[in-house]
Amino acid sequence: MKRFKNKGIFAVLSTVILTACGGGYSGELTGVLDRPIWNHVMPYGTIYIPSGTLHIGPSDQDVNRALVQRSKSISIAGFYMDDTEITNNEYRQFVFWVRDSIAHKLIGGDHLLDEGEETERINWDYPIYWDDEEEAELLEEMFYTQEERFWGRKQIDTRKLNYYYEWVDYRAAAKKSNRGNPRSSFIRKNEINAYPDTLVWVHDFTYSYNEPMTRQYFWHPAYDAYPVVGVTWEQGNAFSIWRTNLWNRFRKQRGEIYVDPFRLPYEAEWEYAARGGKDLSPYPWGGPYIRNTKGCILANFKPGRGNYPEDGGFYTVRADAYWPNDYGLYNMAGNVSEWTATAFYENAYSQIHDLNSDIRYQAEDSEAETLKRKVVRGGSWKDIAYYLQTGTRKYEYQDSAKSYVGFRCSMTFLGRSIDD
Image 1 (cartoon, rainbow, N blue to C red):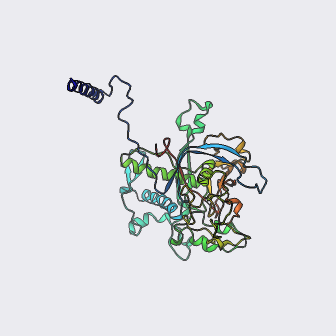
Image 2: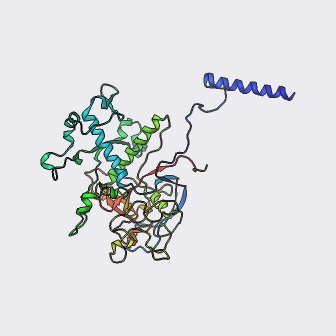
Image 3: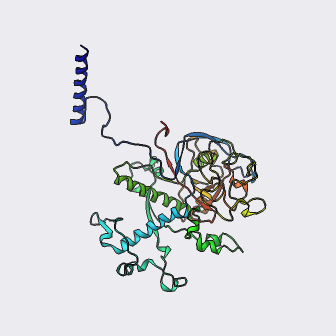
């Protein structure tokens, strides 16, 4: 009798499976059965930060008495974050990609894949022979003219390294007044020069000799692992979009599903990550002091009355210098301040939601300067210890580049927890 029941059950299950495979429906609510498999993939160079709650606001005395960081309890969804600031060599990959894409288009022929009468796609498998006479002639317009060359060196004209990109304005699409508008009205298009402003080392300081940093910092191998600087908030966004497309293109070739985009972290997310699970602590390592029990300085900043080299670095240091916080993130205090996606408003903490708190505003070039303010966090190699505190807010303008501001990327985690 037992064997008969088992055979009956097997027959019923076989019927259900065959029906589902044949017509896609079994008469039961099964959901769509041919969905792709999703496995959590931690992007290279990132750390997983679990969901949690923190109390944003000052963790010590408000030195400026600006009252721009009121206390508030908020919750943050899990996400990935780069364990270091984006380095010169990582950003150089972006610059080289832009350079090579221009070169492929100038050469044409086998360097492009025809997709239709009006669209072409770059054939990245086809090499560029920069020293070939025929190709060099086609690429000549990418280089500085003879009269613009320093010491006769043939160099790429970095002013021509422009990156074209698109992004979707979901907040505009969500407005009730915009319902029914075509999707194309929410696609924002932009073109920006990808090359960092290497002259920041000169124009950020008056009566100060920093020309060697302008000449060498972005290109010399000695600084490959140092954080990139001289990038604007807009360039940070463009880099994030390029990085997303780069990885999604790779995933598509492997038959894998797309991921959520890389992006600049929003302010509350950045502060949550910087605290490393130590709520209300003034510094990423805890605190309340900037030195450990042996007297060693724990970050790269401006100690005392300006003893810059006392902490081990004169300007910036390697992006993985000093001990990471408890999440495994390096230099969340000091080295370079970091762009966030969030617009700066003095009374923001009185207005923001307590769920993934953030305020966005994409200012146009023609708008007032105050609307272009974006929050920067973490303090830098030239700042005093107050600006290294996890609760201290500062801002820079979205179209400005500084020798003390860099960035790192975040990506929202899809799901409840990586351990779920």
